[in-house]
Image (tube, rainbow, N blue to C red; front, top):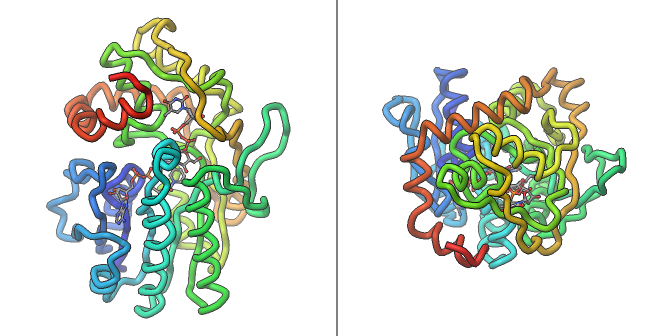
Length: 337
Ligand code: NAD
Ligand code: DAU
């Protein structure tokens, strides 16, 4: 099988390519990535010599490169996106361009090239927010209610993917997952930002009261879920993917990381809240469990410790990432160097 992975030089995409080549060694994987600030070929060092892996640098908004890369492809797994909520609040335009227009260009080309499956990677953020203390979780029937430019752009892309299925018969599947964590996550996101700041003896900025809840999903569990959807998922269907954490809030996550690194809670700094900050996410993953036999494996504390260890062992990786453009972003976002 020939797979086209978009955004394969980012966090989840690179973990997925490594996972796929390990578990499906006969398949050919093409990685189409623009290499924005979030794309890093270092993530793929272990597979760059693999004869079944090929990298194409290109923008999903460029229809000629998309068309030429798609020739002969069986399956597309579409990760490429602008993915950070805070950046979408600072400047939404690129989010609309890549996440909405870029997805449309891929869909058009997929149709033209008679692709056998277009799998779209989306987020639980399209469903909006839940409140603390309520029992509700997001599931495949939850109404869309995106509240940031990022989640609005992802919601638009989900609608487009479904529209191509209903209107043109494109064989699609969609997955909406919760917050991922693990190796190679760009240190603008909460967990790697906290770990790397603490390793640099810097403070960890916590938004608002810190009582926001996320449903943490280990990236390898996510990759396994996508694999099962590609193998046995039903065309036209959506699958929600979530983690194993039980309503853990940001402060509790930080305290665990502080403990793992032998630091003190004095390193936690409360800063101005994110505008429109969604209070709580929680995903009900019953459908994918019942239909495809997936469930997250392992224990949050163990996987968090493993992730902290990875960042301790890969200081060159994140130190080079935290240079240049990152410094400007950090200064703009947090007002601190
Ligand atoms: P990321 O920001 O780490 O990586 C995005 C990748 O896309 C980068 O390699 C970047 O170079 C590439 N890219 C961006 N614009 C592009 C363009 N125009 N053309 C080609 N490539 C482009 O993102 P991630 O965290 O790995 O997220 C991957 C996908 O998963 C996204 O669609 C995101 O919305 C979704 N998602 C992420 C999470 C999470 O917790 N990280 C959770 C739910 C859903
Ligand atoms: O739910 C899935 C989504 O998870 C994905 O679609 C997004 O691509 C991904 O970025 C993530 O969005 P969040 O906004 O939930 O993730 P982030 O890591 O930015 O923030 C996690 C929580 O931590 C959130 O409540 C905001 C808080 N936070 C974040 C940062 C960066 C802080 O308190 N301080 C920070 O500096």
